[in-house]
Image (tube, rainbow, N blue to C red; front, side):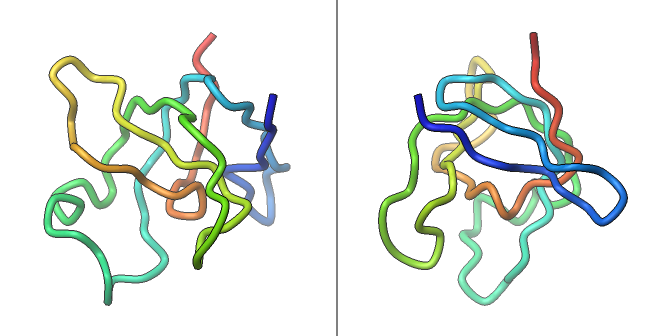
Length: 91
């Protein structure tokens, strides 16, 4: 399994997220210059997500890619780990 550290803040330790885990997290993108239109209404919202795959290249290399677990999906696309805060694993 591939484990990632997500949801870290200065006052809260990093959480180890493994591929295939489900989480609840707040979407707060670090950049807006390349933000997809579908993602804009999700800013600041709590989302149920699935740790789908490790990103292997590009600006988000070594991060986990998260997708929606909602049925129907809240969005069609993926969100990089660094755009998530207050990450909680769903057990």
